[in-house]
Length: 272
Image 1: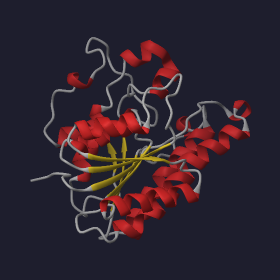
Image 2 (image 1 turned 180 degrees about the vertical axis):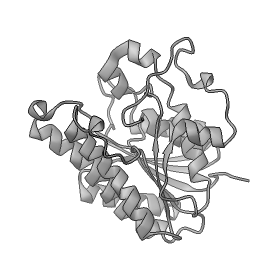
Image 3 (image 1 turned 90 degrees about the vertical axis):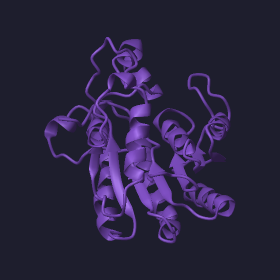
């Protein structure tokens, strides 16, 4: 029986959105979840904190460890990983979900925003994976790294409008390509990306209510993540699209994931 019961997941950016949805899906199996995120105090524009996420995870049947952690800082990541190991005895799954986005062209992107996207997306993913890997390699179940990043593509259309963001996001995908090869047979390393836009705070910021209505809920990503994380070590180095993964799992009804079933969902970036 495929399950995440008693497994320990370290999830970045899990106080809301897709990260929290993945955490809740694992919690329903009885998993342990370390919530590594920055939001410890309520934000005026963003819903959820590490503490509200922890309560939701425990209400869903899991065990939660809320950790204030900015993944740009090595000392904070190291401390969060150590606290997770001390609390739960190890780490079986690392989910690199935290991300920064700004869809602007070269002349419109301040270097401060460029640095933020690269520090969080590419460098943060590498750092969190690096810190989790010694514990993943000791896992007694099938260990996984899952990056929320797109399939690798060199098509200019995915770079031209927002080259800084694309470089940072594809940096996460390059981690999948390299680490899957480096740790083949020891740790499964995969990427997951949505076919459509997902109703998150970032999408609301980019497109408002209209774009939210034309999106799917984070539950589709959570179900696809669960399907990946319950597979064996031979399922590695894959760049998975959520809908395709669930179709392979036998899912045929995708209307249940729609924010508004009457509205055709919008395709996401980086999906041909």
